[in-house]
Image 1: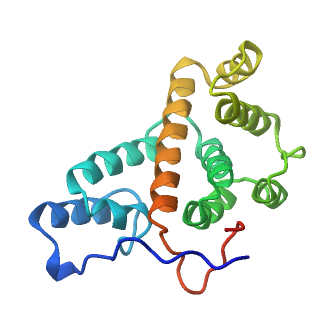
Image 2: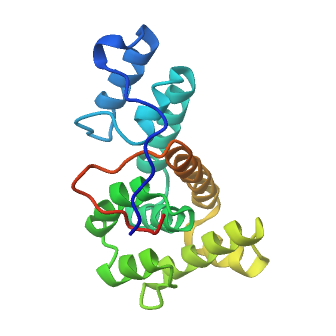
Image 3: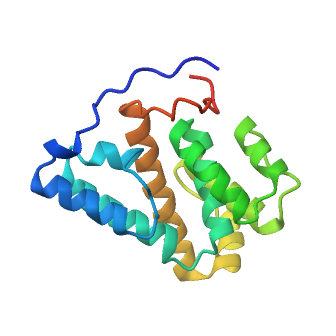
Length: 190
């Protein structure tokens, strides 16, 4: 894989954080993500702490408080990460997806940009929904009905919100060239 471009923003040293940046940092570290340090999109959002506070709260809701079971939520995040070729998003969520029950073959297929044909029926329905939404900016009645029957109204709304949130995360990671940890290899060609 090609080398990732250099980061466009520097990490802000802890002793240089403003009061709003410090409050955002503490909210992220104390939240449900169990992060030992600030990295990924959160390091970018420290540069705009008012926005970062709203974004991280929405993200916590999307990950931990929707009607989507974690396996389907993580599956949708991986499909989004692959479509955006968001290196850090993939790095952060592929292990979580595996722990939540997504099969290694499915993860491998998604990473390679292949339809996960051996995935369970519910994952394939989510896959078709996500791919169609990103490709056409709409979903057909048939595709919608498959997911709505599977999830119900509220969780279908939450799925669309989760996709929007993780597209924003992917944009943040890609625009600001957020690096992977030095020991990690990029999942996608740059």
